[in-house]
Image (tube, rainbow, N blue to C red; front, side):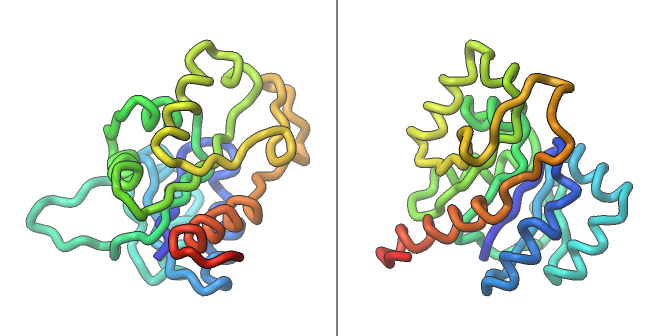
Length: 187
């Protein structure tokens, strides 16, 4: 079971075609959870319906009541992609102020549940004085980061070339490598 967590940042509209469908084709069952704004975004462009049809599970973007059944099975691995700078900062400091962040924060503290995160940021985010501390905190928590100039060259705000695509294949490969590493199997 792969938990796909999406945040409201550019590239989110490709979650179904970039990550969910390829993961299913690789044999994963996928459950999607979104931040509240990401949920509104994908609902507005009718992607929620398509994700639910593809996965056979409801897309979550709000918490359930204690009397309600869990809509998703427990995930064997979580992928947070695309992750906004806001989400990275919140996860690094332990904030879980929505369903998506609570789910990821819990996984970071759960032995044996790998978390893979792709920060969809720009050069200004990376220059913020707190950024390196956020990245270091996530690494200390065992989060596998998919970032760097080889997978996501940083651009100045509002100057990003139009052909930049989220490295979905690298993100899915990182999740699969983490699962193999956890189970002791070499990929």
